[in-house]
Image (cartoon, rainbow, N blue to C red):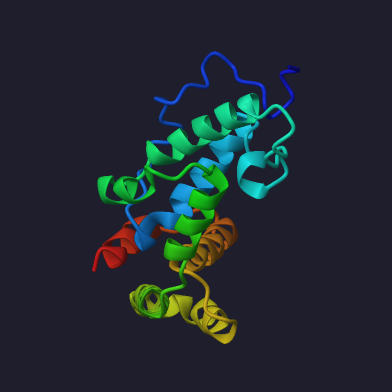
Length: 194
């Protein structure tokens, strides 16, 4: 068999191989696990046993090589699932069926997880804005113009605001002949840690 054929088995394609280090435990890691398994199967040229592009031959065709490859793919799936899940699939004979079953059970969009993620994002955005405002309030009055300019635009990140203030300070230093004594980096880091 040509090594590009999905029915080709490399000597390293054995049932005891763990293709990925991620073990499927349920809804919480299904998407990461399935993505890792998909990449590994693709590397082994065995995606056809899951996506139906390498269909089981009819009963009159020689089945042995297809059954062997299917069993290898099935064992790769079983090697990367939690013991409780393993017990439920160990008697299955079709890798594609097991894959679809796991997808149906665990590839769920969880509304509470989505809500929690959106809440966390909102908190992080608010926290970032608070840090920006603290940074801007910590500047002395000589930076009033650039402070107003920063607040007129959509609010930048703290890093972007720091960059704008640094540019302004450099510009002032050039105009003043390099005698600007403000230690802006120290001011930034002292405000950032508050």
